[in-house]
Length: 182
View 1 (spheres, rainbow, N blue to C red):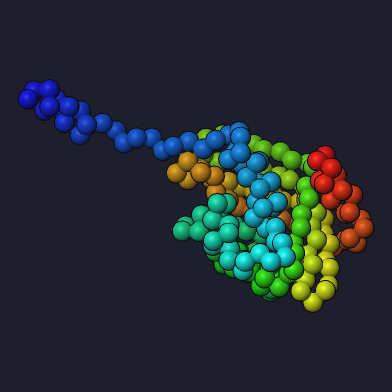
View 2 (cartoon, rainbow, N blue to C red):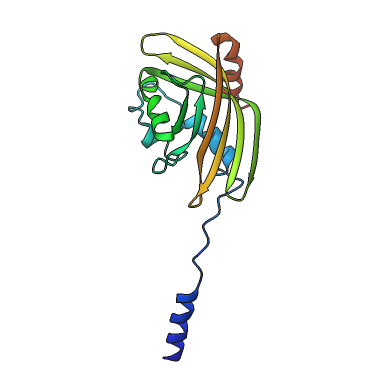
């Protein structure tokens, strides 16, 4: 009985379990997630289901607590600056769903700074949007993401993306390198 009482007292006085740390390397580290974010999250192939940001991108964004700062000069619509990931993401749904495909390739200049419960990553990428109406828009871009660790998973809290329109032939070599595994 004394042992049971002692155990109950120890449990009552015990501090809460510390939050689960986020990985700093491997497939769920910030830089790996950043690459996946562009190469899988924003990728679209002909025949893909309807793009719903809150469903497809919840691995990367905290859609339940979407506060943050999200800027993209390429964002469709009248504004490029958002303070809510859900609003920012929904803003891209028409562009994604109006495309036959959206393809990306990485270009380099990758880096990760991470420690504790925050991280920053940067990548270079190119993309090509093939719209349902036949128009093709090619672009060259950079992305910097600020991450916060939430319940053992990294989520985007800050986003700064810049892209400029280019000719498709200007970026074709990145897709060839990707196909060759380089």
